[in-house]
Image (cartoon, helix red, strand yellow):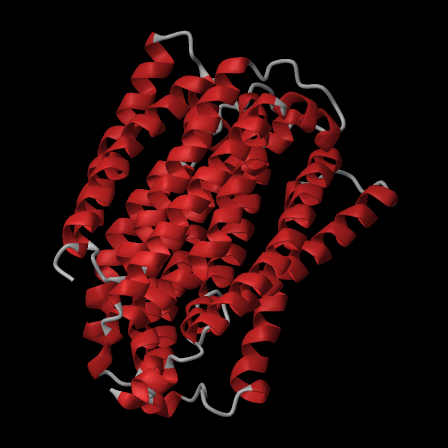
Length: 445
């Protein structure tokens, strides 16, 4: 216990260092991301092309669920190993996780090559004109899926950085990737390159794969003498343990993907792909506050795992109080931004979008506040390894989300706002139950 206490005496300093660096690089990432969205909008030069890009990309992000929770499971188990200074176990967890994840990655690539040709993408995306052929969209989907699958495989380095209290490196990687993309798309605009979804895909995801590869090689090969990626560290006995905790995260992750990544598809299918643009612009604008809150939450997950191992529950309660205060402050700014959103979007993308109505903005503001609230308790409960209650809450929310959204969009005049309202109603379940559950558990400590 003395050794553990000594190990954690600089815990606050490590956390604040993480928060500062995450904040610094996240601000740069937000700036470059806003530039990137505007540049992509200008490069594609078409609401329909932009709508296809946003819709298809959101659909492909569902592939992240096929890591079967391995990433988050690795994060929890690896943090425990690092905390206990069990380096051989840490290396085995890392290598075993990479090998396990290689299997679904390969299967995804094989499946998309075989089955992509069988889908009518024009009809699925509800395209009004035929400027994009089904053959073109098929090639685009294959390239996008293959590149994204490799991207999410290489992203397994993320839980490794979280576990060794270097979460800020992830934000550095995201910033560098965005910066590369901003420069590249500026060059496309400068040289008046023909708008192309395939070109955009190759550059956008190709840069991410390149940066993740360099960072991973650097971490395991050059910059760190403790953690090594060698096949000899593969431990078959850890597979079941990783998949067991990963399975809980898998169900939770699946529910969250359905909740937060189906709106684009529903809008495209029921209202038309052009309406995706207005939805995404408001969402991107207000999601800056979800991102800002994540600056505090990302390192909190690791800190809470450590506090739980050390039974430092007084510190845990102080952390929760600080998060509640941060939530109040950020919520105020969400509403200030929402009120001025039309003006801000006009500056951002370079044109006035009159079809962004008041209901869309207000419902998106409510969604953002509820989303942040749920995220706070999700991160805390993840760190405490209370996953089952989250599975139930988000599982029910996932089941009712799409039906409610469809009912609202078909039977009311809310249109896009109806789909957002459906998500808000679904999120009301975890937003109420998770705080109550955490409060009840903390009484026992």
